[in-house]
Image 1 (cartoon, rainbow, N blue to C red):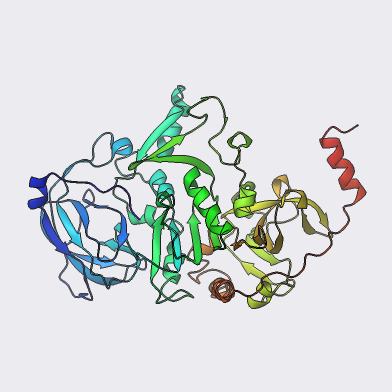
Image 2: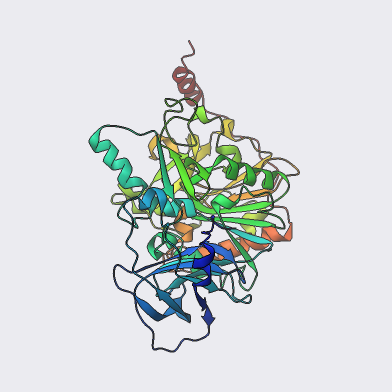
Length: 474
């Protein structure tokens, strides 16, 4: 469950500083890191008890605090470093120098995301667990500005200079600061030790490790939180196979599976357009491009093709950040204590994954069932209003592909993973966490989530005529 580790020379390995994570040692004095100091772990994510290489860029030996996502001190570690400048090609090739130390993680260390000096992130996981969390490390590294560049600065530079490169690489071997490691995950990480999975052994797995044949062995519940944009074809197929074999999934994310990438060793390959065989097709880097021949709706239901952002309209319509209960009939809705006309407030600037609306019945969105290839489904709630651009809605949606497959519950927005969502600091207080906890308990119970599908309301003649005209039917 880790990126390709750095293998030092035999001589370098013998000279490595040995460090040990000391949980519980919360009293100072602690040293501190300066602005240009940094620490990188390889692998970034590993199981408790598995040592990892550390490259610490500072002079001398320092006792540094270990913190959680709230900034609370959990322990300490003594590291020895040496000044190591960031290379000019850091984005493409990462850190290639010999590591400065070896960090031992005690086997009893709880799974979670930790920070050295409340800044540089590393993840402790478990070898086997019934609950697995997919960490969007590829997305984190796309935004990671360590070394002064990231995937987006390069794309902007190409737009400004004119010449376009169809292929770009960015390295996983770069230090990961907490603002990129947590991004919109802070509420989710804050919830983990107190929510429905509190006290459990949890497997944290980077998205690029899903392709390993044993990656999801023993997993009964798969959680995909936060901003999870960058997915390889192999990782997507692994999740699809897991669901087909009866595994349940919860998505607390949006812009989910937006970009197609590939993984080569410890680098990410991002084709901004085109493919290895044809540089002009697909025309975009997005998974929902038809030329990629792997549609998103069957995999995750709500998705970026039918999604968007509340941000542009939030100044005029702040209520569009609110989820409105749509279907309160199902056992899942009742377990979450969802009643018709209930609302759950979420940050109105968030991106959402959505589903297409075919028409509105007295202001209530009616989904386009022609694009829902599911055995059973329910729209639990929706966000945005009837003036939604492109007639899409943010969809909190549950479905089952086939009678023998697992269930998928997609909450439709990464708002749920923020401090305003699961962190309890938003307009609905603890309500988002209560709903997520109830959903997990319902999935784990094996209870029925759905009621028999109702007959669809007849589509108004006016809507059918407009559809025919758009398709050019005479």
